[in-house]
Image 1 (cartoon, rainbow, N blue to C red):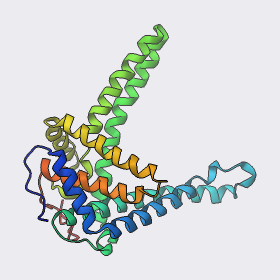
Image 2 (image 1 turned 90 degrees about the horizontal axis):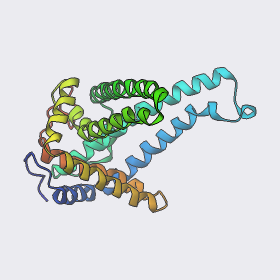
Image 3 (image 1 turned 45 degrees about the horizontal axis):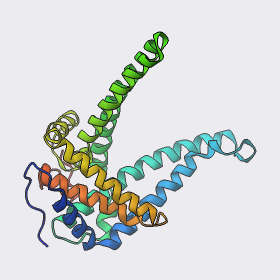
Image 4 (image 1 turned 180 degrees about the horizontal axis):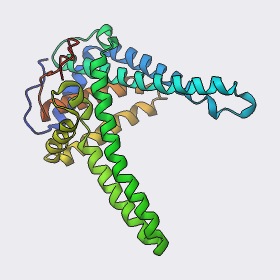
Amino acid sequence: MASTPSATGRIQLDQAVRDGWAAFCRAPWPFVLFTLLSGGLSLAFQALANLASLPEASQPPALVVVLATLVGALGHLLVSLWGTVGLIRGAWTALEGRRPNLGSFLRWDGSAAGRLLLRQLLFALLLFAIVLPAALLALGLGQLQPWLGALPLLVALGLLVYLAVGQTFLPWLALLGDQGPMASLQRGRQVVDRQWWMVLLLVVVQSAILLAGALLCGVGLLAAAPLSLCVATAAYRQLFDAEDRTGLLTGGVNG
């Protein structure tokens, strides 16, 4: 099957699902094995970071708990970045009509991980700048009338949903686009705004794929998670473009 067509500025969801499925089927075992490896490492670091939640009688010395929490949190972050970069690289390669091998998933790209982290932090700050004033305003208004306190929270919730959908493709823009952090967020919102409801439907379809995987005793997530990402990658190529502007596939450091 040929690679996905150039960007049209519109999402054709049925085509994105077909292309995503075809991409996953080009290398199902590398996708599944990498998902298993990254997911297992993530759970291991998470367990390390959660040592402090053990019953007091079972906890190791305080210094060990502090070190374990720091190592676990840092390890979980790095594995998350590594996993996202690897899966998007693999999905992009498969959508180009090639079969990604396990090595292409495993390769660490510090420049790509840094770009992704920087944009995620900027987006998190933006969300915090919405949540904090809304919470403070809700507390103040709640002193007057309880129902008034709910109004800022409802407005904030609406904004959070709008922004979350608008930044659905932020990881792809970070890893494959050549714009700076703020420009990436702005471009994501501007392009998605024209197709906001279709992108929301895409998120629903991805959630349905993940739910179906979770219902298969959880083991199905090993296939559902990369399949969902392949579908989203195909949709990104339709909406934005099908060009690797940073050398993600070749280990480049541009952008």
